[in-house]
Length: 136
Image 1 (tube, rainbow, N blue to C red):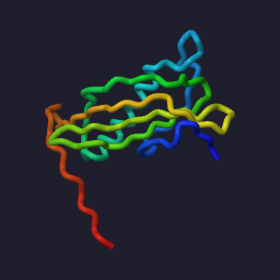
Image 2 (cartoon, helix red, strand yellow):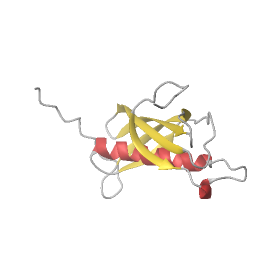
Image 3 (cartoon, helix red, strand yellow):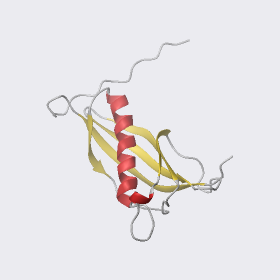
Image 4 (tube, helix red, strand yellow):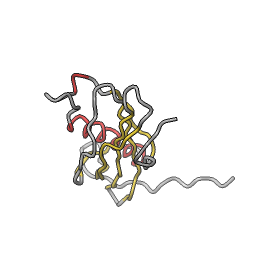
């Protein structure tokens, strides 16, 4: 069992990747930009699934890095769609580090990303309402 002093992640596990030495700064910490990139990928995956097509990132609300990510940590990124408009959606994204050789999971950062659904020409397109689920 993995201990977590930060409670439980919000959303669905969307990306899971290993922090490698090539992703570090001079202090041996993983670059914040690398973490941001993994979060953007997770948001893109969730956005494509919801919009059923291409999406682009148009905004990232302020991020505060709570804890560093170290080489060997497994970065787990969780996403949850907060709201869907006509062409855009806001996705809550959390990054958690599963510490190397420890049974510990810690929240690293959290942000809200905004994505816009686009057509083949790169213009905004409407997002279809969610599919109705059949009752049992």
